[in-house]
Image (cartoon, rainbow, N blue to C red; front, side, top):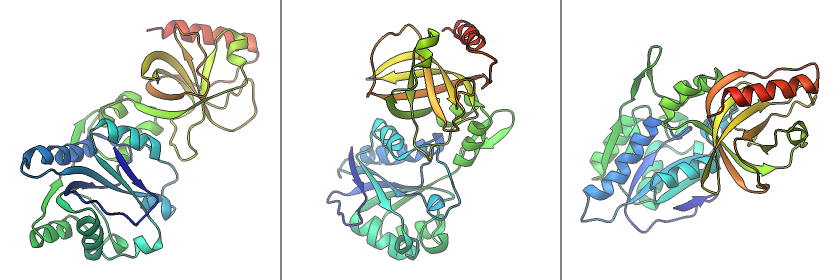
Length: 308
């Protein structure tokens, strides 16, 4: 996958089918957009359309201070887009000049001019251009006037405890409530955290339960502190795990959140490797224990109770 990032000076020579959006979470609604553009390549057999995702970095909500955390970091989005078969990812710099661009010039200069869009896919609630004046109607009108196929995708609904319209806002709500199984249904995969495996305080090994530690990006939304069952991928290999999200209150007064995982049936050195930790089920809240012996006893019970 070609990645165009941190620059406004680019030009794509091949015609494209482009999806426009924030793509926070890359949930099943976003995935429907991605299928539209990857499918367009097959439908237009006479023209070699490159599938292209156009998104902003930072997201407008982050730039304007309305959003403090993200479901998917830049690196996590890249991982997901590549796995969906996207040819080109554009992470367009969002700044004051970008925010002040009127909708039609935005389409003319970028989507048509630099990206060469033949097909444009966007959600019904798409918003672009100065003060968000660009919407689905503006996009469709522009497509009709410039012989560009515009595909506006309606929201997907899903039945959980009630009916929900799938959105990043709803996924964020599920994560914040530790409803990991429900979040997985909206995302299509378990909620995951990507990071580099770093040295911790080695307390897990001291207690007889060696763990791996990753420090997520500061803007990554983490679920409530507690213990979660997890699947962990390191170098393409899958491990079952038990993950603690939190600050380790029994052994530390530091408030820095970390992601610490015990891997079942694993004994190796993976420091410096990248890991993807997929959170599947919330087991219990993080607790402060009166002693290390009490903590060790609870860890042993948790590991046994949730052994796959």
